[in-house]
Length: 278
Image (cartoon, rainbow, N blue to C red; front, side):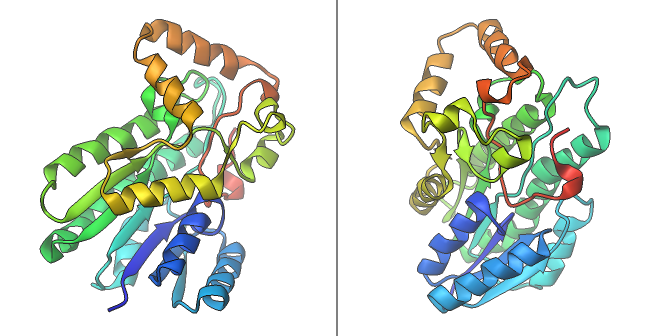
């Protein structure tokens, strides 16, 4: 029997790479994104390359009713894999950033992700099988001045995922938090940082490798996955440093006007013109 996977933010970047991996494993795919044109292009490639069935759902996942609308579309079909990947960033001093953008970010990263998990988890528990992967970030491990809401939202994703993973342990259902570090995607062009220091020195992770790390971790039922040796080392070292020191380091780099001094990973697939970093 063909299994079904739902992927948000699937039109490009890490979400699209997840779709490629799932298609190679013969999953039926339900791809969700607000970029309809790019989404249909991704559908065409997946269907022609892998011969799998793909559905495209054009939906603004930052809207308050997005989760209910998506679950209504799924219409009681069994979902075997849910990947909450869609996301975007807002950069700048909190007192100056655009509240509408931050509200959309909160809806997308926290409310929609949590509600989709809430709505689809019961059927997985009833079937005694299922996998949920929530894309967090290395930003989840510390506060981030000048990207305060983004960092805080990713901390929520990590904490929420780990907590529910423990609640369902032994049920046949697993939850995984994927925490990528700086990742090479189209977002660098959006920020005008395509020629960044990290990019020039090949320190940005590739989206396909990030997705593969997350996919392997999800298949094994791991609770947390951190792609890349450098990211794992940095997070390990942070545990032994004073919090105030870590925050000041991140504040220094974030506050710099030159975008090439610090590259902040932002998740792709949700690239609406109204939701670019402010």
